[in-house]
Amino acid sequence: MPRMQMVSACADCKVRLLQPWLTLPKNKRWTAPDFQAINVNAVPVRHELGAEIQVYSGSSGGLHSGTRNHVPVIMVEINLEPHASAEQESEPDEEQCFVAVE
Image 1 (cartoon, rainbow, N blue to C red):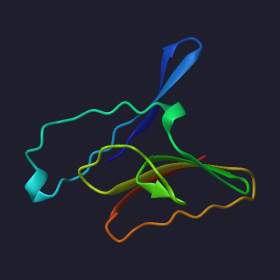
Image 2 (image 1 turned 30 degrees about the vertical axis):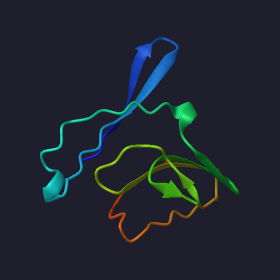
Image 3 (image 1 turned 180 degrees about the vertical axis):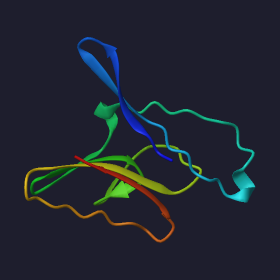
């Protein structure tokens, strides 16, 4: 199950940690474990009226993240102003989707 938590690394800084666990297809089950550090400043950002959408994995509104994935997955963070809305499309092969709305 994906988990997001705030971790204080020092008095003036915070680290956002998300650790998703996804089931790999049978032909990739013995793939070596991997880790990716994704810098928030390197994440593509989509702007809509009253919404900011950070694309951590997959795609959103024509933007594509640079993450390495063994399983197609969309992972976005949507920050909405009051009364705003946003849409997130998915492709037929992107069966996994994780959306954080703030």
